[in-house]
Length: 525
Image (cartoon, rainbow, N blue to C red; front, side):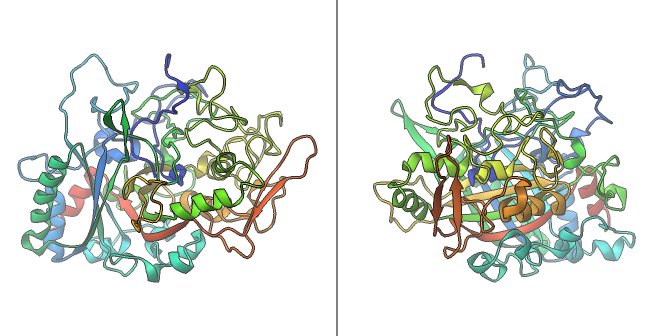
């Protein structure tokens, strides 16, 4: 998962303009009509009612996640209400998607010339699991409570773990901090601009959680953007533990509050990320006060085997240059330049403008492009996570849209920068954050189950039957394989015998209630 800072490839021209991939920055685009389709947006998004991190990237360098168990349900419901009361002096307030100029890219409804309403030093958001809703006694007080389109959410992450490859070391019985054990009720996420702000708001939150025995904190952990020295000064970077620059690909949303450079991908309908009446594949949870303008998110803590990954690259240097192999596995060079635009070098002559780094298709509507994966292997991580125009399971035809399976990813690394001179330092590194979507089944679980961990995802392109995502797939060294096609009829390069490079340490399926929904819960008495 990458931090929510604007990524910039070192060799990209900035004038004029993965596993980090799975946690990159999501987004955001336009209101009224859209340049891609010309279709009018449905009803406007109620940004002041939607939790901010669903639609906006905060660009803050540090985050702290708190896992809470409900203590006294009535006190817990009352406490949730204080986080949306509007009284900042009483309690830190949930951050909404309403306009906030500082830190956000200007959107179509923003006036960049105006002074910001305020410059917050923190952002606060929360998610509630199904067991949390039950323990909060919402079902007891609201008999019509219904999440009938959302069986994955009501089952929970532990119950559905096998569907997304969380087995073996990643299985729920090995999760830390009480995740998947039934007491993982509420996740509170605090972003901050500085260590002082993090401490100050953590102290306030800890006191509030304990007040009236509302909540019991059962786990917490921190993430922070990696720092590198530039011109003798430390700067936050967009790099993640495997060394890739992240946060380049953005999920564009019709009517969303943030504006990013247009690319070949069609903007997504807002109902894919915000629970809305016009949705095509679900009914908004009932009662409407609880369901409308909410969303769902899968929280994950993923440990990355950085040493194993680097050793794996070097162990195959007799077959392929290690950095080229790293690029083929991901789909981008480690500096962010995509293979689709520069398959031979991470520093193409003249560079690539920053706003063009995400502007490409793998397969065009007429079938041209890179259908056989000579530039970027069809089985590469990025091509599985976001197939673009590639005909794949759940999509259909060249140039078609895979939008109904798109995800927005919010997150950051945990653990310090990896130092290749001291690889065996014993320090755990990984990624923390959320996959945001309106349908866990059709988005998160579909992508992980079909595109990441299935060889049949690419339709007419026949991958090895044991092939999975080489970066984040659940691999068995006895049968793992990654095939790199070669041009001019040369035999493909076959890389085999590698292990899984990631381990799930924690997971939770969360409902992200709207501000109206949190007030509704608080008023249940």
